Image (cartoon, rainbow, N blue to C red; front, side, top):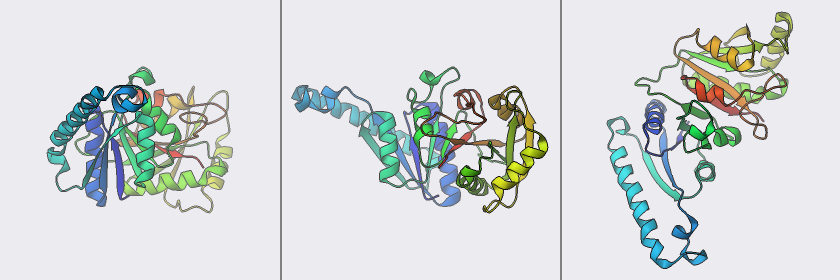
Length: 277
């Protein structure tokens, strides 16, 4: 993990994410790419295409303002001795985040989430959901401040689909980065109930021929997958929740159903997502 992308809107929540990225960077000798998107009207950034040249000074003003905010942020003590690349782009936030992550070959995205009642309240509108849904690299979503980002229990919630072994291995490698215990969690629901013996056989086949060696299996019953993940996670200390995502189907899909945005939106715990390939 050498390159960490952190989008920022200079809010407290975005700074919470940056603090965690800084802790990870120090621990793993990583660089941080700090990104701010200036979503300005087209006529301000493209006077030839529909505006007037007098709008150009206004766009320059917004750019200078962004750099001033960057300067204040870069002075934060928690960024000391970390190599931070400052990037400001005139772009739609979601497209810009994905473009920068690919251009600089980032290994991970760390971003904040404001919301507790829908995607419109989340970090830079609905961009957290969009990034989580489409990113090919892990996305760590942070809601609260963590002075010391310590993870004791990494809970990987899965339906143990044998075609998702690479996602399992990516989650396991991430758990090793955080030096945490790796828990494989299967949620049983009334509508899609599977016996414990069947679940264990399914998980054993899921883990077979992978790099995953040290783990515990948990089978938890609840009314929905989402509630099961959250209720199980609450029983553990210093927890990080990991889930797989399908780019074309939304945040995450298990058991012929889906986990809604509430998993990221309503839990105070950090959540990291991995693309299912």
